[in-house]
Image 1 (tube, rainbow, N blue to C red):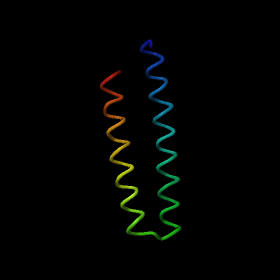
Image 2: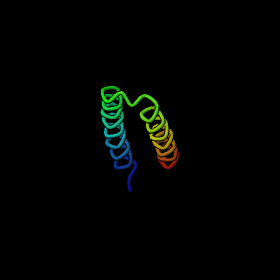
Image 3: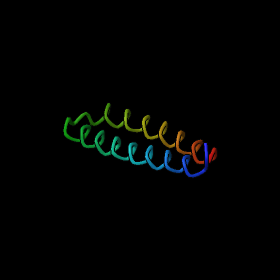
Length: 59
C-alpha cells in the first residue's frame, strides 16, 4: 500500500469514527442511559483511540 493510499484510508476511517461517535453520543444522550451509555461510550472511545494510535504508527 502506497503512502497516499494509507493516508486516504486513515482519513476515511477517521471521518467514519467521528460520525459513529457523534451518533452514539446523541443516541446515549436521548435514551438517557446515563450509566450504561457512559460505560459503552468509554469502552468504544478507548478502542477507537487504540486503533487510531496503532493506525498512525503503521503509516
